Length: 456
Image 1 (cartoon, rainbow, N blue to C red):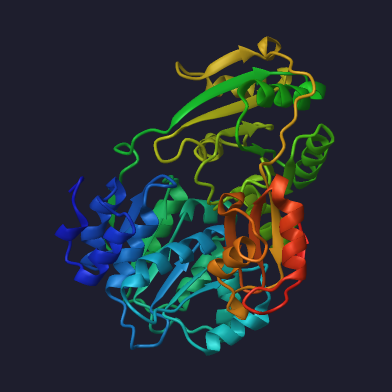
Image 2 (image 1 turned 90 degrees about the horizontal axis):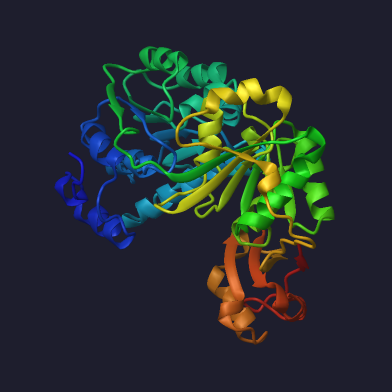
């Protein structure tokens, strides 16, 4: 059923119209293979790469059978990380535009528990969240799953990698046995098959990874002395001049250290790892996504679920613990048909480990062949302004844009991405205009109100 139009599916006209307006012209492989079964209310276990369109596959399915007037939780989507949960909820809200009053709620750790309780008291149709926080709400009886008819496990292999199996099983024990269960995973280890057999009934097995076009990634490996790793990485940056980079390392301490050392070399870098508070994670991710930061140094757990659509380069500063992790890391570049670069640094002591990665397409090159560019810098094109006002204050992107282009007199082309959260908004401003934008917003008003403003 590949290359099939959405109009060939038994979907309401309003949904088809909305999908067309959103640019869903033709189904991806995972959508064409899974949606007919999902719409027939069958259990599905599907193997598909990140970025394959799986969120729309299960999203269209659960929204198609949603009863808006029945104001209870009807669908639950479990995700491994806060970032992926936010990304999934955002996509579901886009697809749900065809109908009014669909309430989609995210419940994740790292966010205050109290406001979540308040949101739950007002009710929701769909809940998206991480296993630990969902379980906490279930144990405290602030969340009820008695009415769910669709349960989705997204990136199930990642959840198992992160040790969530017990939490997942406990969450599922609160759900009715007569439900549809959809399980999406990039890989099919034994644990996934075991989980599927225990929570699904006669699941349709779908694998589209072989039919999906391979990402166009050039993979290079360099052997370096451990003391020269950072220098080699800077040489890689100066030779290949990426717009943005994710650097992967294996520990939180190392992430902070590498980011700090890169900053000392005038390379704009921020670290992200599990020790950051939620507001700190937001600050870092917003800056990387809106071009206010060019290098993100991350641990694997912290990087899962990141929604970076255009990434020039990935660097494995440390060798990943498994080939699956390697594939997941480098798969973040070369999305949507674009080309990408992936580099792996290793020491002489790690040569035997790296031999495992040798094949006819990967390039093993001499780091000494990289040209030395003195005084190389990587500065961001934009700087981020934070406004102490968000959705709770009814602030919209248009209001911020109007304040900056109106009274502040900035050219619209100087204003980059605008992100609005519950209580804060972030706006990327071209570096040359940041002082003027800050001054005008600090002294001016948005929607007739004064808001605190600062530069990240």
